[in-house]
Image (cartoon, rainbow, N blue to C red; front, side, top):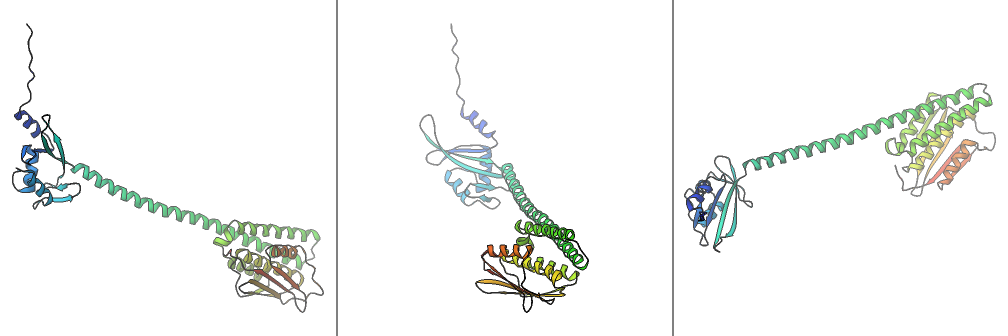
Length: 333
């Protein structure tokens, strides 16, 4: 004889006990809104919201829309509320259908206190990280600028030293009984210095961080140290190439004034129009005895100036005068 085993379906009491043991609040309402099942946690929360026991779904709806004193709405769109014990609860609604086809409304309340605190801390940490990243970017930018300034200063000092050495060497060369070998040595020194200046200029040091006026000032200072005073009137052109070429012209004239004219003073006059920039250079030294034959320095300067569409004029009477004119450019410092 076989034994029939019956599986008993859980009764209302056991279902109610299971629901009451849930940490979350939960309740069910029938299609008319009447509460048919509600656990202890939901009763407690609803009492805080309403000040009374929950009996109808509409009462809970009103309580969520306008909770009584002591319960504060944290996020109305997400139905999150802070209760008097400082806990946070989030309410949700869901329509369900029973096995028999009956429609019910399920209301659930979940404790989101810890989650909300973690989110708040995460936002605080994210804000701190963003601020730290912003400060780091500023530090990195400042660091790049410091490195650039150090490199620029080193280049400026090197250019200044090389120009000074060349001028002093030229002065000694002209004041002594020098040989062709001595002239060649000093000439090679000037070539290296010019190459260094061009490298500094085209690498971006001169136009970006060393104003052309500063380069000119360094040349004027070096000239004064070897006994020739340079008077500058007006300003260098704003174009990068124009300022460079005119600075080279001034340097070349200083060398020639010392070498050929025994000058003690040189005048540099910068002028400009909307079409062109011009520099005129004279000195108080001995006037040339005849037509000036352009050597390596002046010839190289002429090629560079004419390569930029400019003109260079050399006059020997009544005094030496070098005039350089360059068309205005869009490439400004």
